Image (tube, rainbow, N blue to C red; front, side, top):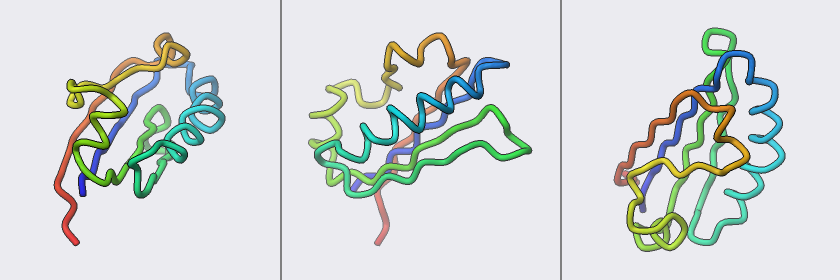
Length: 97
């Protein structure tokens, strides 16, 4: 299995708007995506009020590629979030069981 960690830093002042997108669009989308075993969404804390994240456990690399394409190491952006986000990071790890 593959662990994918996706982190977003919002533009200043866009936290609430991105939070709405995160809860109403991104989380439901990821939870119903074929090939995902588990989704762990992370909301901002007081010491990092502009940071959101997802830890996703994928069945395998083929499942991830089926969702995002061959360029799975790039952070794919929903057009609804493009103006809200300052930066994104993405990392992949083999899941240790």
